Length: 143
Image (tube, rainbow, N blue to C red; front, side, top):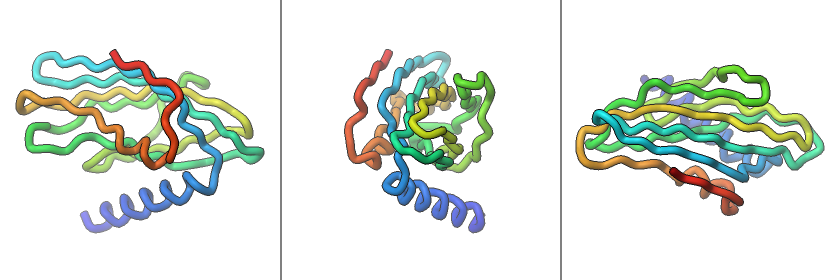
């Protein structure tokens, strides 16, 4: 457990440092939310581009809400639309991390899906990660 926490802290620290050292731009998200049979379903498309002249290989952390009114998050799936393949990810207690690879001036779209058990009358989607980008997302569409 301690090793897992250390990995998470190192990964998150690298994530924050790389946001400033590389040219990854998160510019759009299209997300659908559904509540059904005591589960909260999230199905989102996330758009990124590399604004730099060098290829990038960057770890991103995608958080899940943690609260006594929420159960476990499961059925997690991350798909790279460009190559139409599932992306490997590392599961942590508070979210997942995965690697974004982009050529210079390239774009990519990921679909992230998951469901979370609801133990009460509350569902939540976390927007805090977008604060780390230090700029607003150019386009958001929520359903």
